[in-house]
Picture 1 (cartoon, rainbow, N blue to C red):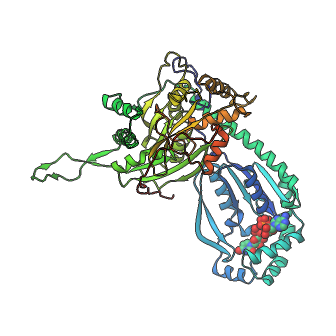
Picture 2: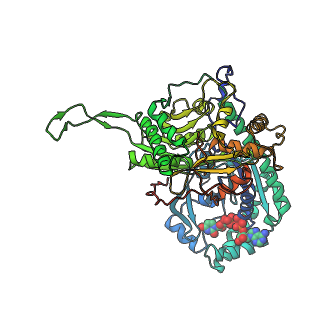
Length: 605
Ligand SMILES: Nc1ncnc2c1ncn2[C@@H]1O[C@H](COP(=O)(O)OP(=O)(O)O)[C@@H](O)[C@H]1O
Ligand SMILES: O=c1ccn([C@@H]2O[C@H](COP(=O)(O)O)[C@@H](O)[C@H]2O)c(=O)[nH]1
């Protein structure tokens, strides 16, 4: 189901929102907060409190200390004798600091040098930052450079009495920065104190908010957090509205880039087997893997081959002059965890394939897809990337994943999305944003709505909930999931959903109303007093397959069950937000005794 906007059917679509024709992820406009103040004033402590309380995925704390200029051996010697001035703005590489923030602001993968206070120098290592939604920049001169100030959304000055700062710095520098007490006192008197008064204090006038008494001032910090939350909510609404726009029909969906598996007897036969309640668990996995292999093989048809640069001599001595060789490296990327159910088949077809991963998860309340983690390899120039997801419904997660891969230097035309189940709306959203991406899909929703199915949403819901009733009519939530051994498996959970009122004024209100109508149509009754956004979140979350555990929905039968073990925090968050579990009761446990398959190569970028 598309959770992002009301979708006109392809028949009736006349909308031409050309502005929507490009995907702008949240990390190309990160929210930047500057925190300044004296050394020891509590800047880091305040920043950490903000991070804890806003609880945004991909919040980066960037310390200006990382941008101390590298020292010459002579300067290092001075530093060890407490004769080097680290408290003048000239000690910082202000240009490098600015360039780093600009690069992050543009959503680029950015290298940040690591600094050691013990060595008084950069360590030579770098930390790579990518995908930040919120960046907190902390440092004595973070509100100093007008160019940097212009990039900040909120500027905070932590105003703590200088003597208190001195005491705290003494303690911290001895314990954490391995400094001796005499040296700290000497440096304080000679450099820190005079610069604090002459150069740091005046930057207070560049701040939007001044926090008297530092991190003790919980009231001020609460106010700041409320303000930041409001700004982030606005940003998230803009992102959702933008994603919604991408789902609108700009031009009728072009099928040149989409390959749907033909409904051959062979494919229908395999589907019939996996739908049959008599099918054993092993056979289910076997036939699912075969369908996955077919999808992968289709995707590999898009890999470039070139004439072999040598003649082939057969065992019987014949010369073959028109051999071909693969001319393109193939790299796989999973949208975890659902994409994992393709991995067994991938391993059989390309055993040496490098596999990268992205974790994209929806916010439980708004349904906004958020990038939590990426572990991607260094993509070689011109390589082909197969992006795996079990299902694409709204298309938001896949759109975001494509953007992540593009940001890592892959050509748009070299990305092939491989997906078992997809809605037309989702594919339209992806292709509106990235018209050169190729898609290989096992099941695509009806292009023309069928009788009684007014749109993709209906189709998806019926696919999801088919046969999913208990004898007493209770709807059951069914998923094909990837289990801890990387095997496709099924889970069943009874479901109770409360119907509520849409959030007035929310860009999702229409969508929420539709969600409620849809849920009631499919028999979900009221149960608990939940905000509607939770329900909507449920649908969106499932729809975008952002949950790490919800792997794949299909026309599946409720005969294969397993004990649902949902201990991972992400699953708990999902359960809490979705509230689909009326009780933790799971139907029967399907016995399984399988060895884990060989672990995947996860290349850290
Ligand atoms: N309100 C506070 N009360 C007591 N100690 C604090 C308080 N805020 C910070 N500290 C301590 O003071 C030291 C300096 O704080 P920190 O946040 O690192 O300051 P800054 O980043 O401004 O240099 C740290 O050891 C920290 O734990
Ligand atoms: O090698 C170094 C580099 C810096 N300093 C001191 O650090 C503070 C800034 O860090 P805060 O976390 O804001 O305290 C600055 O006052 C420098 O004097 C250092 O001692 N050695």
